[in-house]
View 1 (spheres, one colour):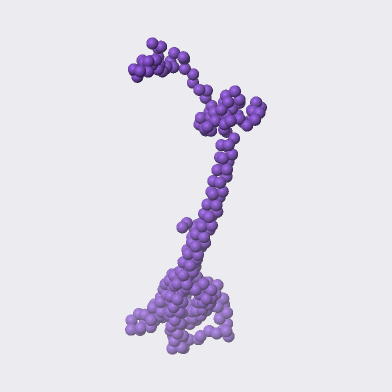
View 2: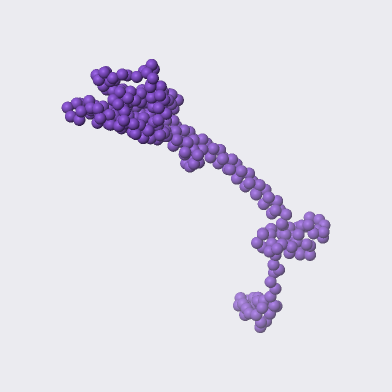
Length: 304
């Protein structure tokens, strides 16, 4: 069975869901900025050796970014896997945020809130900028307090974005279902299209058969009419065409009717006059005069 290109494109689109490229997602861009800033923070404010916090913070920031990538890519075929990996990314981000809060509390630093004079400007800056290039010029200039509050704000904003994205995925899953449901729907639609096409072809076939029978009957009827109108007449003096004005009554018809190949009336386009031979070439049968001998006379072209 063959289908139109539009039907094939519709079937393929229903099976595989086309997600947005992960590098275009704002929460991924912020997660990447958090990872790069965390690496610089650990390098500047934490000891290189003897403190496991460095590895934990770097790995938590990296895990958040990498799980976003894996979840978005797996979401093309499995919504369940995408939801799980994005939740893992949120968990890693929450772990990193807890490490920054512990650093602020253990070092006696101030955690900025709405009452802080620099809080609104910092919040506005973090909301407007997503990529790491916007933050790297200040990474080596911020103090530990400024660094921690900026990273905490980025972690909160990223987590909020991911929660909104998860709600969108939930709504999409309720409306469209998972990969198995989409595959079943696509296969069912394909088979339904096949059945519809088969029924349509059967109906057309029956209609064509009926039309062929009607045309055959029409041809037979016209053939009988034409055959009845082309009888040849036995009287050579009368015109051989039935519509001749010399035809006065019903003449006696000849034994064999004319055919389209060898017509018996001169008006036909294929009519050819019988060939006439010279008299001397016509053979003569000479019968014996003396029947007692039962001996035939000579048969030839001369009267001997």
